[in-house]
Amino acid sequence: METFSFVPDYSWQTTFGHKVLVTEFESGKEQRRYLRKKPREWQLSFSGKWASVEEVLFFWQERKGPFESFLWKLPDTGETVTVRFKEEDLNSPRQGLAGGSLQLTLREVL
Image 1: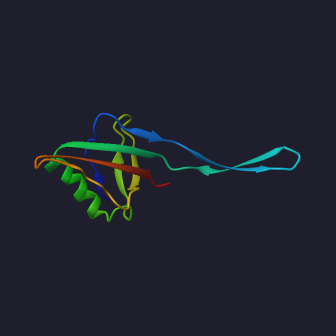
Image 2: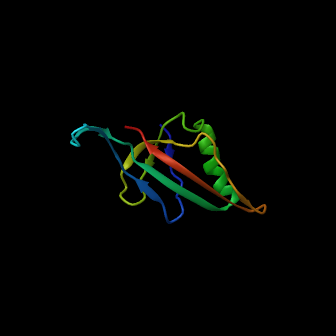
Image 3: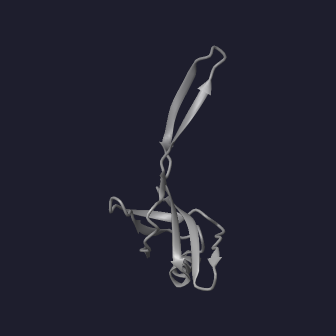
């Protein structure tokens, strides 16, 4: 399995969640059932020289966007997780001929 070894810009955002089914009764009472943990997501940004940004874009293309999973090592804890790209489409703004940026989301495979 391939490893996503690109270092994102300093800031990133992690999303955590849980799937809970809430049933409301006519009496006003609620019943809650825990279904499962939602996969974690990480929103990453890459910017700088176009050649560096383009490498990340090529990795996304080789995985066929969100189709193929791969490994990623969390920058803050060092934990290795299996993830997929969330986006089916990517936008990559250019700054002249030499610079560019890219934002993408990695989603944990449970």
